[in-house]
Amino acid sequence: MAKLSGASPNREILQAALQGLEAQRQKLDEQIAQVRAMMGNRVGRPPKSASTPVPEVTAPSNGRKRRTLSSEARKRIAAAQKKRWASFRKTQE
Image (cartoon, rainbow, N blue to C red; front, side, top):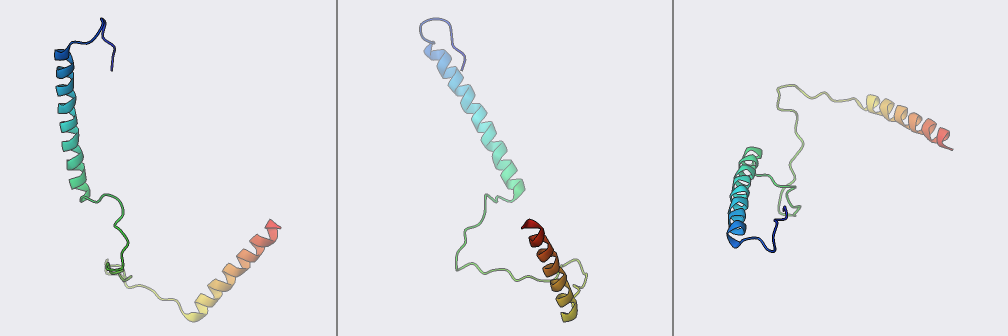
């Protein structure tokens, strides 16, 4: 707040300033409420509790069928990843 010249600010000036600031705060509160309404009123993460069920992972709902890997393909991928990690660890030493 800017300093006013003189010994002390006038009480009427302070009340007018207070009313202006409260009006600004009211406008900001209304705008915040509008933005929260647009966001779906979600404020942060929902609390973890045993009573809330964990949603199951399902196939994408865009109509595409999910592809599955054969066990041989999974083994090849795992072996390749192990090989990459082994070479990475070897270079770290």
